[in-house]
Each structure stands twice: as structure tokens, then as C-alpha cells.
Length: 266
Image (tube, rainbow, N blue to C red; front, side, top):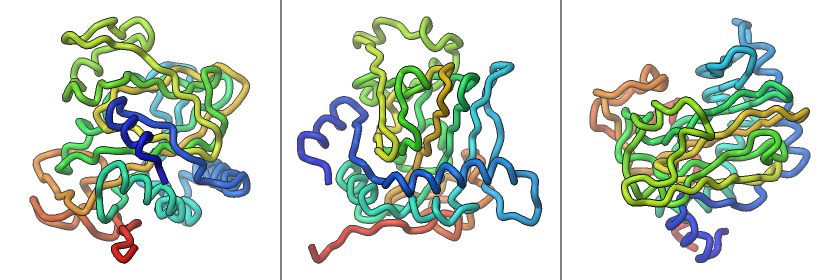
């Protein structure tokens, strides 16, 4: 459970380093599942995630992106139901119930792990409303400055939707301004230990630099949605083809399972 001070920090800063949510043994299993899914990505006899590809835009570098690995891996399906994450997400969102919107592995291999450029999450999800406010990012390796930890801009979640500007940036370090619309822009590196969770608001400016170390950097972002989230048919997203409800209806179904409910008797 998060303390009131931690909840307050998240609301003011737009991100928060949370608690340990996985044992070393669980981390090892999840690491192995990442490697298995990548190795078996072209097999028709094996259950596949929604997407598995290298999404790095820089030649000679790799960032493996796996979307909805939970659908291809029982250990990851179990992770989506992690009770610590569920409780803390409930604290940060005020939700009474959570469904998985989608998950996303981002794996930067040792030595040539690429950059994940600055972005905001919510503007990239135009088929859901209201926006999913919080992502739970779980480290599967010790993640630090050397192997490409995330960077956050404190307070940027309060500045609105600026995805078009962020998409125009091409240099991870040099394009970040010192000031934006009267706000000071500071970049904070966010190290996370393996098995820990890190939360960020879906409008917080964030990204991660290249991994040039000799260590892997594996992590999973768990994107949840509350019981109020409904489908917006006018938008587009890789998960759209799996939607089975009508425009304006609550988003639910086989691919968006209920994973946490608040204990209303406690």
C-alpha cells in the first residue's frame, strides 16, 4: 500500500517509484518468458501476443516491443492480477475496478538497446475515454542510467496534450527545452530495481535513452483502465480489432479482462 505522502508525490510530480511486487524467482520466470515469446514469434502452433517486433527507428539498435504478452504467457497473465499493483493503482486512480487495457514489453538488449523517444501515453490511445491515468511499469532487470532507465519531466502531466510537439523531437537529449509555456522543464532519471514497480501518469512526458551497457534492460508496462472506460470508435489503435462492444459502450470482453476489484467490505 502507498502512503498518503507517496500518493501526494504522484499527483504533484506525475510519477512515483513504488514498491517491490515480484520475487527474484518470479522475475526469472518472466525473463525466460520474454525470450521464449521472441524466439517463437513466427510459430503458428504457439499462442502469440498481439505484436512482437523491433520498433527501434535507428539502424543497428534494438528495442523489442511485445504487446499483450499476457495473452501468450500464463506468468504474465498472473502479473496483470498482481494484488499489490492492483491496490496501489486503485489508490492512484480512485477506481473500484480495473481491467487490463493492454501490456507492453520494452526490451533493450545489452550493447545495442535503442532509444524510446519522448512521448505521452494517453494521446496514443484514442479509442478509449476517459483516459487511463496511470501506467504500472515493472522492471525485470536493475534499470539505471547505464542501461537506459526512463526519464520523466516532473509536473508535465498538468500541462495537457502535447504529443504532436513531442513526436517532432529527434534528439533525446538536445531537443528538450529549458522552459515550456512558462513552466520550467527538468529531466529526472528514474532508476528502478528488478521486481519493483514505477508508476507514471499517462500525460507525463517520458522516454528512455539508449542502452550501451553490457546488461539487458527488460521491463513491462501494464496499462490498466477503470470501470468507467468506454470505447471510442472514431479512433485507431492496434487493439481496436479486438473490441467487441459498440461505440460508447463500456470496454470489456475477452481481450480486456477484469483483473482487480476493490474490497468493499474492508
